[in-house]
Amino acid sequence: MATGGYSGVMEAVSWGAAEAGGRVLGVVARQLPGKANRWVKEEIVVDSWEQRLMKLIELGEGYVACAGGTGTLVELAVAWEQMHKGLLPRRPLVVLGSFWTPIVRQIEAAEESARGAVLAADAVSAVVEILQKGLGKKSGFPRSERKL
Image (cartoon, helix red, strand yellow):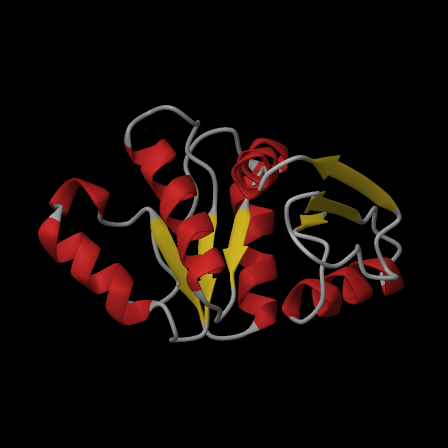
C-alpha cells in the first residue's frame, strides 16, 4: 500500500495498513516540508511534488480518494485522466464518502465518455470490496457501488 507518506489521512491509512500487516510505502518529495509518518516502512524520496504524484500513480494498482484538498483533487484528476486517455490501464478508482461526488458528477456531465470510471463507496468496507473485485480481475470491475 502506498500513500503520500505525510500526516493526516495519509498517516491514518498508513497506520491501518501497518496494523493489518501490510507493506507500507510512503512517497515523499524533497520539495515539500515534512517527513514520512512513523507507519511508513519503505520511504521513496523524489525531488518534486510532480514526481511524487506520478510515482504514486505508477505504484498503484487501484486508487482511493478520501475527502481532501487541492493535492487530492490533482491526484484524482490525473489518475482519472490517464485512464480516460488510455495512458494507464483501467484500474479501480474509488472516492470514499460524498465529498468528491459533486465534482465527479460535473465532469461526467461535461464529458460523457468519462462516466463510470470513478466508483463511489460510502464505507471503508465497500472500498475494500471494490478493490478486491477490481484487482482480482484483469479486466472489468464493478461500474458502481452507488450512483453519483
